[in-house]
Image (cartoon, rainbow, N blue to C red; front, side, top):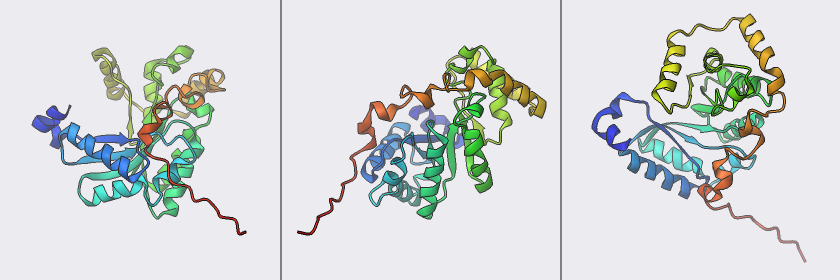
Length: 249
């Protein structure tokens, strides 16, 4: 990918990547590694990845946290925009936005699951999406089929999954492409896209309500199967030092 960007495509693409590091040191290392591997001197969007835990926002905005590394990189012209991703719980996303606001920072983008199942269970669409639209923050919708898990419910088709995600007020819908057939499927939905009517949305959500009720087809919310940083905690960097209170004698 780096060779293709370097030789042909860098000025024709909007390039983004993600970092897991929560400390300034680890975030800087991961960012520099991305720049080196992508063979470029700038990345358009870098996002703090997998904001899954309530402690993540404060670790990132700590004095020695990853936020400082990305701000420094932006000042140096290495990145243009800063965002964050997560798939666990909409309330953690809201907490990240609150902590950023408390630190005088407004994210450029937020990436989160948006799909027909999410509308029924711990819904990013209902809790986070309106906040982002109001604040004019870019919305990156992901997991519209949840790596195929949603299709196993046999309540919805791939085209319906894509169209539902596209009808929401998103900046971009991210969908996995692992074959030419899947690529053509996504392109066809985009080419023929028309906004869903209220009655179409109601019918689709009614059809998926029972299957979606307990998150059985959104394992990224209900299990740790999709949590790369839970399985590889070293990616986050060192834990911050804790100050121990000294009781007077």
